[in-house]
Length: 506
Image (cartoon, rainbow, N blue to C red):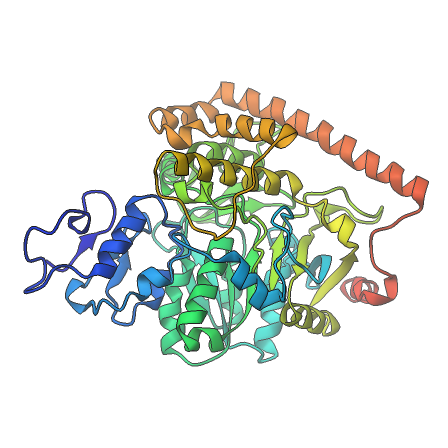
């Protein structure tokens, strides 16, 4: 027997009853890894696959690790030691990276500087998810020979809704990897390629993948030396493959009428964008309610439904929403515009420079004219993404404590889990209720189909109107505050290369 699953009915989870190997009991490391996967501690980040020195591990159709070559296992235990889902020692990593341990109550984590940013190339900015900051920065680093490639997620050639981790080594490959991908993708599996190929690389990953990188770098000096910068993405959660496949099947069923689909694009248009598919003739077609006139649900509104139905178990116990251990962290700017001349629909990325390396690379790209940085005061920066961050953080702490009381496995972060009280407690309990189908899975496909029905459309429209009012109230309050105080939370004009770029781009 050479291939073995690590999830569900895995022989590695059973008491040893016979020779799975020619002579010995199954390797202890693989049995431990099977326990991690089976007890809902696996992020599916790909770190174990990427660090395995003998290519024992691969991925199944849902991107869980799977044993592909049992006989090659040397029981080195690297696959277990690298796993950030089972254990991530927050304090020691923070102390090494920042020189101190940030307050656990601060969802933004440590950062040196905060920016609203975008790619200076107007076409790239227009075609990117938010401001195109990550792609603009990576293109600059590649063309300036600072890196030889970047670990990013492109679209899978077969399952076009699925992400495929690659090492992009050219401008064309980087441009092909733009746009958000929400389904789970095991980015760190590409460490296998990095270990085998000398060079300098950037890693773009989710918080769990950045956690996995830190553990991998401590175990393999090639990974530590070759990944010269980490760019972390803000993350509420990933999405299981099941709903994406269901949505894709609906799209494919329409192909005889609409034409062959060549690409799934999660976000078209600016902040927050709308999901589309690209047809063979190059035209774009909305994924959801394509025949509707006027309002169509945004990517954020759809993803909020998917989160509440199909958030993976380990995402529910992850507290890191802002990639707190990356050199640079990037997300959408969910905040009131901090100045009258900022319109988020033009495309901006909210960016945190957490380390000296990150700060240096951002400033070099800005000085070279590749990106535009508009500096934010820390107080203004900490108003961005607060709803998502607080929700994720306190939900994770609540679930960890509940699982611990139930005697279930929990991730070990090596800190005392804070307990919510007052407003946070009430909001956390309500949020838990809204995620009930992530725990009780029966019926959630029916709920998903209802959400995309005519009645679901009406509810989405009502929620959209409520969101418009809430954002208007927030933005108006911020505008009035600026008028009263005369405060503009943006850095001085001479520190920005934006005026020159506007002149250059016409």
